[in-house]
Length: 72
Image 1 (cartoon, helix red, strand yellow):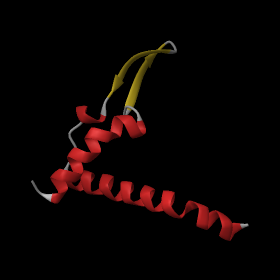
Image 2 (cartoon, one colour):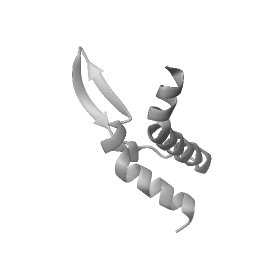
Image 3 (cartoon, helix red, strand yellow):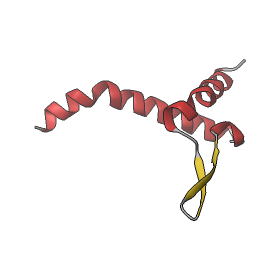
Image 4 (cartoon, one colour):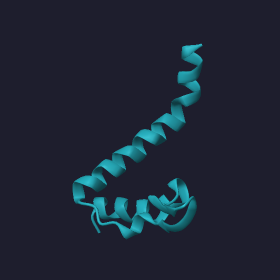
């Protein structure tokens, strides 16, 4: 399994929990269906961007207290 495939599997296994469904279908204000991340087929380049987004979020979570103090 390539590093990209590992990243894809890790993302799909945790995306619904971490971000919720990728989309929710509603009609007349009622939720009809939640569509999970695993229902979509994304290209290799799309998955690379997903991986990068996760890395950006990790950095933000790690350094947010430091950055907050610097802006005060």
